[in-house]
Image 1: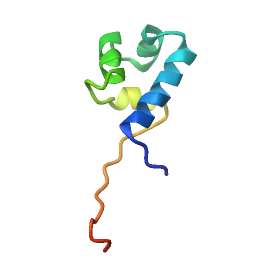
Image 2 (image 1 turned 90 degrees about the vertical axis):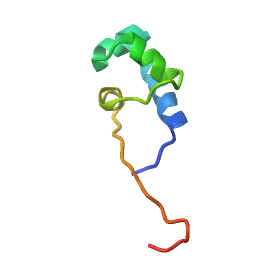
Image 3 (image 1 turned 180 degrees about the horizontal axis):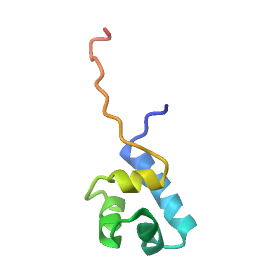
Length: 70
């Protein structure tokens, strides 16, 4: 499992949109509105489960110790 930043996710999303041919086509395939997708691309909203699933990702929340202990 590789940790990704939001910028990494947006880059993967942009590639998937290019592959789909348009934002509208990708949004329809993912089952979201084109407006929502546009907001995700611009960083105004976080990608939801449908968008993430469409690019073969899922959100996992992690907590990391700042002191180096387990």
